[in-house]
Amino acid sequence: MAVTRPPKGRLSALPEIPDKRYFSISEAAVLCGVKAHVLRYWEQEFPQLDPLKRRGNRRYYQQHDILLARRIRALLYADGYTIQGAREQLHRGVAETEGGGEPAQAPSGTASSDRRLRYLRQELEAMLDLCRQGH
Image 1 (cartoon, rainbow, N blue to C red):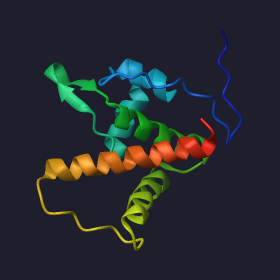
Image 2 (cartoon, one colour; image 1 turned 30 degrees about the horizontal axis):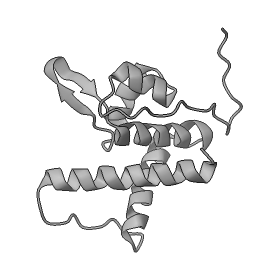
Image 3 (cartoon, one colour; image 1 turned 90 degrees about the vertical axis):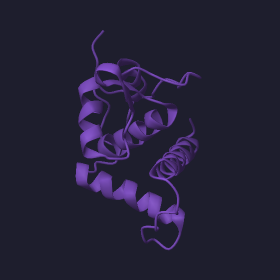
Image 4 (cartoon, rainbow, N blue to C red; image 1 turned 45 degrees about the vertical axis):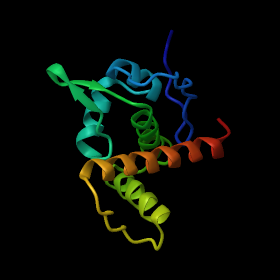
């Protein structure tokens, strides 16, 4: 089957995310519509995309990681942003949800709590984007 690239600004539909806790990088790649090496590259470029790593540096993506990767994909492929522009959009989206348009101060507590809150916020934003697109 020949794979054709959708016209600029239009991405092919992505599969529904199964109700699982963890996904391998190959599963995540299919769910995000990109190849595994692209996800690894995005991990370097977008600090928010930080899947769990276990033995042998194996990556385990969670649902919020999949949603974030899909958001990154949409920014880069559908909206035409550069890596830097997509980074800024993700940062701006987080800052706007925290109010005032300025980056919010980190709440007191552990770095782990901070990270979880960031992931939850990103997951909610990605779900809101999907709802707006009619998925």
